[in-house]
Image (cartoon, rainbow, N blue to C red; front, side, top):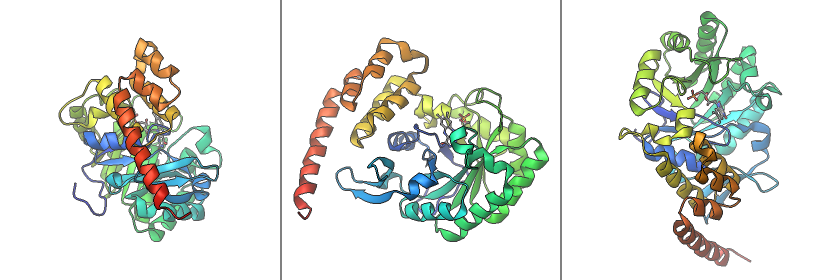
Amino acid sequence: MAAGRLTFRNITALAPMVRVGTLPMRLLALDYGADVVYCEELIDIKMAQCRRTVNEVLDTVDFVAPDDRVMFRTCRKEKDRVVFQMGTADPDRALAVARLVEKDVAAIDVNMGCPKEYSTKGGMGAALLSNPDKIEAILRKLVSGVSVPVTCKIRILPTLEETVALAQRIEKVGVAAIAVHGRFKDERPRHPVHCDYIQAVAQAVSIPVIANGGSLDLVKTYEDIEEFRRATGAASVMLARAAMWNASVFSSQGLLPVERVMEEYLKYAIRYDNHAFNTKYCLCQMLRDKVESPLGKQVQAAQTNAEISEALGLQEFYRQTEEKLQTRREAVQSSSPP
Ligand code: FNR
């Protein structure tokens, strides 16, 4: 895909995933062939308190909370491909956050599908689905207020007609694309995905529809991505769990052994100083039923990226990378004014 304004037609995307969609996973998915990568949902209230800082040691841009936690870390390599997903129920706050990040991301997405309580309380996520006026107000504000494309991600409504009507209303606001997770609000991830609903939306709107929800039963390999796209008649496909379990699902070269994917993931986690708990969480998701294996137990017992590196036999990579980062830290310190 050529650089420039991001388009959402004929792409494969890494879906937004809380805790999973941090920088190492996004870079890994891009390496394997994903065209677009969504960050984890970030809540507008928390983001609005963040300050933007350039991290010269890591060569990243960090959005840092008042308690010094990095809420969102990004870098040049993903700038034209990363979609910032927010949880919001407030048009003004949504715009403030979108403006804070718009220079550093390729598009802004609003989560309208998450049924978890942390999202729906306060009217965010799937709660928005029953408030189309609010949806319209948020999207309208964003579309007219930022220079990057705006998208949203919905779940399906109880009937085909309602789902199509909502998608058409969203299209009219001027969003660049709409991701449709083909499950009802109350359905769990193990339930089969409703391809017919996604198809009905794809036929009813002219903006690109990104089909989502196929990981469990339909998409296990790269070839399945195209099958899922065809089955839904969508322009594009977005993968969450299939990518979380093995990000090489995006690769046209075929699936890599998960141990190899874990190593590549860990290298990015070390290089970008990812929080060890987050690194561990993602590696455990990749291990799936092997999480109680000797390797799984070692990863679970590790408390730092150094210990995780030992578990995966990457001590030497860890040592060399830390050495480089330390040299940069010293250079940055000595060049900054007292
Ligand atoms: C999710 N999902 C999700 N959706 C969203 O819009 N924002 C988010 O932050 C998250 N977080 C999240 C975390 C984890 C660990 C999972 C597994 C899922 C939902 C996800 O994007 C997707 O809609 C569903 O998982 C269905 O797609 P798959 O898994 O069938 O490809």
